[in-house]
Length: 168
Image 1: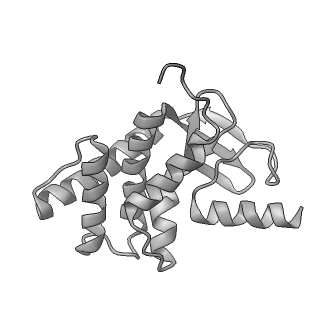
Image 2: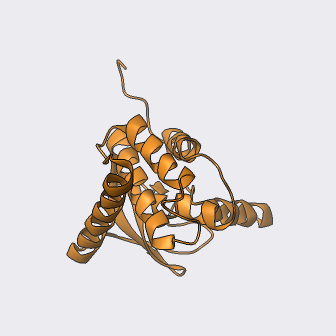
């Protein structure tokens, strides 16, 4: 049990948890994004898009490889620093949008005894990703894992629980 708690804690720290509401953290409550949540997330997207347009002459397009490369370039060129939590979390929203489009996920509010956060949920299952903090927590801890690798790990962690589609 201690190993499971340690593993769960490490996964949450890295922001890659595929979590279930009945896990060791206790009961979670899931709800739809509120109007304010949607508005805040849109402002985050627009702010990051404006930063990229002004400084790099590029904007986010919804094309996975292109957008992940743009996120990485923003980090590499110091447009978003390790101490800019709000901007780093905006990057997580952009990355989350890409994961949602690719894996058929929906943004929800995940609330447990640790707090309230935006998460991606697979259909009506108990499988969640927490992309808002995936880049931020790493960068704030000095971890320089490339954005494409963070994305790939998140994709793989959820792909393991998504049933394969027939005739694919």
